[in-house]
Length: 122
View 1 (cartoon, rainbow, N blue to C red):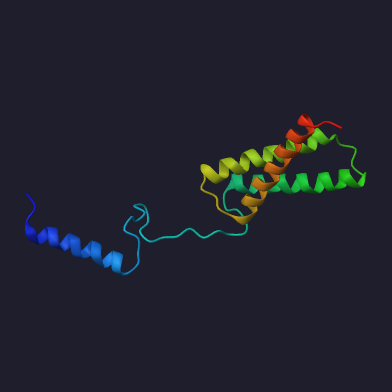
View 2 (view 1 turned 180 degrees about the vertical axis):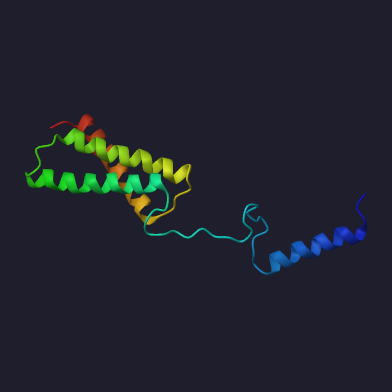
């Protein structure tokens, strides 16, 4: 049974957190810890995603300039693989680096580009 004293202590503690403009709903794993976004990924899957996305950017640039004999769908497959690994690193490994966001953006561009080519062929 709760007494009046323990109930009032909990109310004061709750009121103090609200008054100090801090969140009532704390992260249970790390109280008050905030994850900072880094520039480069820290996990192995994040590094693979960035390497594959950068390889896509370089290869598609060479393809546009006309110096790359590799088929476009093979280059797009490299970019999509980087996208899938970046999604895995984002959700499963909790990777929050700027280059992972770039890999996801590159993958989304590839997906929209492929969908546009299939819907509106020229």
